[in-house]
Length: 164
Image 1 (cartoon, helix red, strand yellow):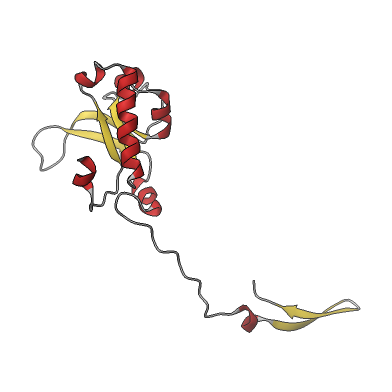
Image 2 (spheres, one colour; image 1 turned 60 degrees about the horizontal axis):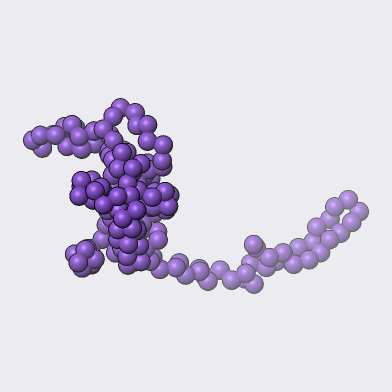
């Protein structure tokens, strides 16, 4: 179902599994991790750059280490300085941001990776692989070969030089 909804669309940012529901947590770390693994692998195998969104607590308590080390993390931890020890590509550090033209609070995030460049260069998230550049054959190496004679002291050197 999820893949059919995003099919044909292009995303410059990763597609995330959102880990924050108590019903998920009640299943326990093993079961929650198995569900995450299945979803993330399925979406990744369909050509998407995927990641996991969650709080520091849910990542520490309900997520297996292999998942946290393989997939990019979007950390939701509303503090001035996080004490989350794992790696993360995005940190949602506040839920009380203000943006002109929007009534109410908005989330504030810091992104540490250039996801658009990573995703597009790998042809993920609907972007497709960029075509390989074709070599410029307008200047053939044989056309740039020259015969040169060089005199150094009493010695003379003669040969063909080819432009590299």
